Length: 559
Image (cartoon, rainbow, N blue to C red; front, side):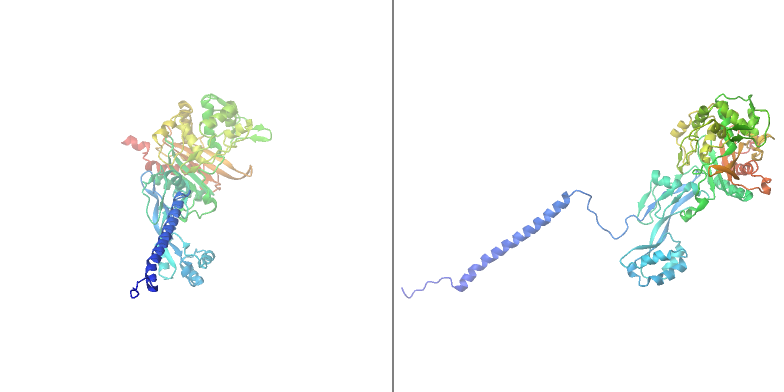
C-alpha cells in the first residue's frame, strides 16, 4: 500500500498544539502574581491594624481649632461684663507675595503698630503657606487692607474677647491671650473650672453666662470715687472693696491704676498690680479693731477696764509711742477712739502671744485664701513671734495682709462672729452653712459694732468724716507708714478706712485704702486717714447704699 499516505503533525501543527500550553502557563503565572500582590496588601493592612500606638490620623492643610469660645460674664443683675466677638484676623501666603517690602510699606499706613521687622522676615520665607500678620482687627481696618487688593493676603474670622465696660472691673475680670484662653482673674477661673470650647471659626459658646456677685452700679461708683480721691489727694494708687458681711459676696472691688482688658494685658507698671488680692500691706490702726475684739472675746479686758496708756513703751532698741499721748489710764472705748498704740500694745500683752496669734488664725488672718478672681497673697507673719511682735501687730505693724483678706476677717468680727470667705460667684447653700460656724462670741461682735459707730459719732473719734446721715456708719481709721527695704523711711503712708453699715446690724463692709496721699488743701494739709480715706468712704457709701437697696433711716420712718 505504497500509495497510501499517513498524515502527522508537521511544523505548523506542532505550533498549533503548543499555543494552548503556553497560554495556560502564562495565566497561571499571572494568577500567582495577583495572589501574591493581594497577599502583600492584606499582610500590610493586618500589620497596620495590629500595630500598637495611636489611631491613624489624617493630615489636613488647615487648623482644626483656631480659637476657644468662652461663656459671657455678667454682673449679679445680668448686665454684660465680657463676651466673645467675631473679628477678622489677617494672614499671608508668602509663596504668593512677590515683593514683601512693598507689602510692608502699604500695611504700615493702616497698621501703625505693626512689627515690621518680624512680619517682613515671615513674608520672605517662600516655603511657608501660612503666616499670621495681625489678629483681632477692627472691621474698618480689615476693609482698608482688603481694598489694597494684595495677592497672598487673606482673612480668617476668629473670636476675640471684648469688655463692654472697659476698665471698670478689669482686675476682677482678668485677661485672655491671643487664642482666647484665660490668663488671670475670672477668665482664668472659667478655663480651670467652668470650661471653654474649642472652635473652628466664630462659633459662640453654648454655656450659660457666668454670673458674678459684682454689682456694676456699685463697682462704677467705687471706682469713680477712688479716682477722684487719687486726684484730690495726689495719691499714687487706691483700692476699695464692698463686701456682704454675711455671705462674703464681693459687691465691688477696684484697684487703681488698673489695666485695660481690651488691650489684652499690654499695660505695664502699677496698672498690673491687683492691690486687693496680690498686694500685702501693713494697714496700721484699722487693726486695732481686731485687737480690741480679741481682748474682749478672750476675757483680757471688759468695757469697764482701764488701760495704762502712759508711755512710751521701750523694748530693746524699739520704742512705741502715741501720736496724741494721753498720760494716764483710758477705758477700752477711749483706747479705740484715741487710736492709742500704747493701749493696743498693753491689751495684746495681756492677751498673750499664743492666744493672740490663735485669735488671728480663728478669724482668717493666718491662712492662705483663694477666690474665683485668683489666689490671695498669704499674710506675711513673723517667723518667730516675740513679745515685741505681739505689741506691734496689735496696732497693725509687723503683719502684712491683702486688703481683701483683712476685709473678710473684719466681716467675721461684726456679723455675729461667723467666718466669712470672700467670693466673686454667688455662695452656695452648702458654703453658707459651712460659714455659719461661730468663731467668737456674739457679744464680742455687738460690742465692737458699738465701738465702730462711736468712732464716727463721737467728737473724739477719728472717723467723724465718714458719717453718712441715715445710714449709721461705723468705722476705724488706719494711717500706716509704708514699709520699704525692711524698714520705714517716713516718706509715704497708706491711709485706710474700714466701715460697716448699718452699724447696729451690718449688711455691708467697705475698706478703702489710699497709697501715698500727699498733703493738699482738701485734706487740711494732712495725710491721715481721717482726712483722706474717711471722707472718701462717706462719698462711696452715700452713692452705693441706694444702689444696693438700702434706704436711709429717715426715709423709712416717713413711710
